[in-house]
Image (cartoon, rainbow, N blue to C red; front, side, top):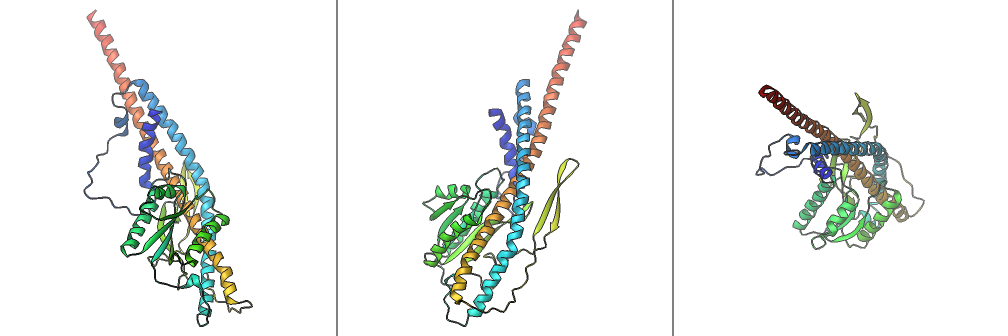
Length: 369
């Protein structure tokens, strides 16, 4: 087991650098520079031939595992991507419908608490991570983004509450209850459903309508493409005045730049073909006539809005996690291949040197005789 652990750790650690390539991470300029050394020299120095053979076998077994995990993630990420692409136009159209109703009722005496802007004293943050690791820096990056957002709000004198979705984020913030007001924890699951979104929406709805919080934000990783994910802080409540789904930076989280990828094989290796997704959302221009009380219509649409936005965020986060895992396992497999090659090279050189030494001894003995 020690041999496997010594091989697996550097492979998975190296794979972290390839995940979430769409995000820029700056390192301190004072960090000491590391000089790259051959992997074989790092792990088999002064090792016996048997130990070297065992380590070569361990690397080979590790590569089989990472290859299998890469294939599983690749199969799942396409399904998750289809769910993301299909959900975006509906959620955006629903927001436009709500905005149109809001505009129509702006001159009437109708109280709509979920669209009412009030002074922000407390913010509820819903953050989405994964349930498992081995996906590069995906979980850590979302956690750091959440910590940064909480620090920004506290610096402005705003109190923060947290709801976590995903075991990794839940465990992290649960261990730091003295620093963060953790309200509730949920698991992400392998396939987010409307029931999961409804459960989360009920807690959010209760917090906002009871005026326990004045604003609800959602932090998740927006799926951009197979090799890029964009950490997003989206304002969930109150509803945007412009009728758009936007992040706190004013960037619209729309479907205009969606990208569908298709996995193919070229020369026995994975290849990715990218195609622009046709997800244009038309403007809502209907003339509305209310047969029911407008309050009843809005009360029926608001839960649907909440569910669609939360489900969308869960699906995007899951797709980003699977893509990050696929990239991490791909890099780990490449590292294993390189490491096995270097180990075999050093082993063969040592074996050749031993054989040469024995031949020289035999020749020297024969000459002396």
